[in-house]
Image (cartoon, rainbow, N blue to C red; front, side):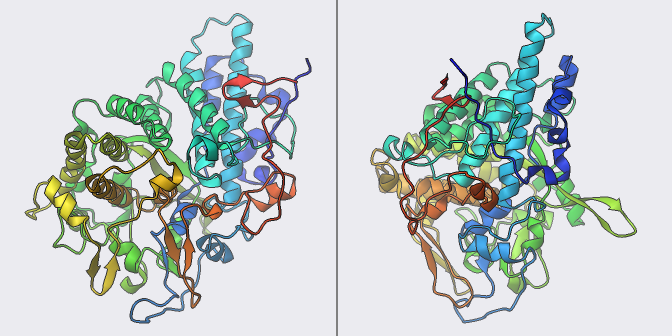
Length: 558
């Protein structure tokens, strides 16, 4: 049979500086002759794009300061990035994006596929060396390559696809092309397949990577070490709603004493500058940082302008009360570290600087260079909250409380406030109603549309609903400015509204197709099937995988 190769569209990718690897001729890239060279290649196989801007601007963590608040106070603030901020906040295609913006959809798309391509080249090189009789142990390198490939497809799934639903919807929703071969040509009409196929392929690679994952790196926190791999598996299975595996892999990551992997040392100190706080939050020696990735992002520069974590968004997250700090405007942990920052005017909003900029000057005199961020992609805290959520779905409230209490207790370290212990009663009374703070409504309770997403995924009791709202609230605080809140909104079909300027609020319903961010316009114009919208004319059935892409774990040939 003749094998048909399908390759991903990488147009616009090679205009960015991080794409030198793909600029080389295939013969040069194939000249890998040792395990050491494979490992050096894999060290470059992590995306430098950032999902925070897309995720936060799409979520309820950001409001438009140029819209009216409850007292009709409005500002006339500018955007930092330009029109793309208005487009993303309105859940519109990012037509103003540029390939040089590490926060833009085109950067997420192209950088993810560059990372995947690099992993595929590493796997091809390993296969060649093994066929030639090399006796080096390639198992750990193969594990890292599989994990890289799985993770970056998972990133693409959670940006450009609808959320994981029931089998019927998963077989209707579009996935993204799952690439398993090194690219040698640009092929613009790669089939996207279905969401069900995409998740099956991710899981296949994830399992292959978990078999031989290692900690044997010079800088393990910048690679898929064991804890990072287990944390990735935890999040993947949480989104897939396989709660037994969530508990299994979270326990492997956290061990018998989860407090060991919380950020207690960070919360126990005060920081005199934002730079010292940022360095402490993202340091490689912090036991809670399982995986760190460097990205090129100016997202933090946007906060405090037209769009910011302000008003109801801040009151329901970092600048609002919680079950054990009900009498405070914000959690006392921020007092110790001096951790809440404002830009320009407090009325414009606050932010917590746990991800920010390290500037690399290319010309100090001209003041130009590259913006780098060090992002904690997988942490002990988020992994712990994943497990707590799984326990709640299994209605094991004692285990869920133990995990939620670890998270809560870890933030009390260093505070002088007499905060109570977290109890079931505090959870159930606090999340039994919404609140008001300084005249601003605080949405503590969200309608979780689980039963609409999947008829078999149904909240059983009022207690379960209150506890789920609790864990989602703590996740919102923990992952602020990271983009994960948007993924939680998608997973649960939480309905939110954005008010832009003097326009009427625009509501995002539980099944709104705009929950799948539109793929880049340049990719669509080159032939890729776009994400459908309600106002689209019929575009035919979803394409199926062919050639070197995998169908549910099996290679398809023609």
